[in-house]
Structures are given as structure tokens and as C-alpha cells.
Amino acid sequence: MVYKLSILNKKLLNKIVQILEDNKILDIVTINLKDKSSIADFMIVASGTSSKHIQSVSEILIQSLKNSGYDKCKIEGYESEDWKLIDAIDVIVHLFHPDKRYIYNLEKMWEDILPKEQVRI
Image (cartoon, rainbow, N blue to C red; front, side, top):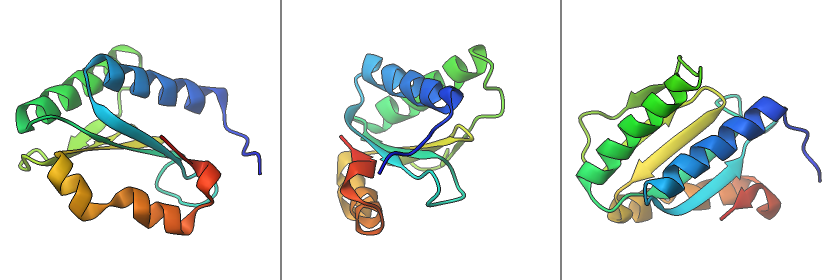
């Protein structure tokens, strides 16, 4: 099945993935939620190497997006050392410490709901 996505959403998704890769975030998985959820068009689940790494990259990501005109983005989970959620409106990013990611296993939850072609590593 082919899903039509706006060019802006593809651009935003690619920009976020590139920022995460540039900042050494690990095991990046994108999940296509288009027409499956009202929360966003995409979800990204990825791992940082430490609490400081996760915090730093979440702040870098928000600032980079704001510098590119995505000024409504925000971070959730400031009090958590093991997880951050970056709400980039059409893309939701979960950055986890690897141990917590394994416990929550968001990829598995969405994999059970969505066809395999919508979950991309």
C-alpha cells in the first residue's frame, strides 16, 4: 500500500532523522502513522547513550527545528533521565535510554497495529 505524504512532512522527517544521526543517536526507527493515528504522521523511536546525551540531543533537535521555522515544537519529559519526547507537530520523537526503550517497546506496540511496511529501521 502506498501512502501519500506531504512534501513538507517528508522534509521534516528527513531533517529530524539527519539531526539524530549527526548527533550519534542509535537504532533509529521511523513509524508511519499517516491515516492510522491523529497524534502525528510519523513517530520516531531511538536510543541515546546516556541521560546527558538524550537531554543534549533533544535540546539540539528543538533548536535546529526552531531555526528552520518549526517554532511550535516542544520537549516533554524534562524531569526524566531516561526518556524525552520531542513533539514536532507532524513527527513525534521518542528518545530513550536503551534499557527503558526495551521495557516500553513502542516499536512492538505499533508493529502489532500497523503493516510491516510502515515500520522502518
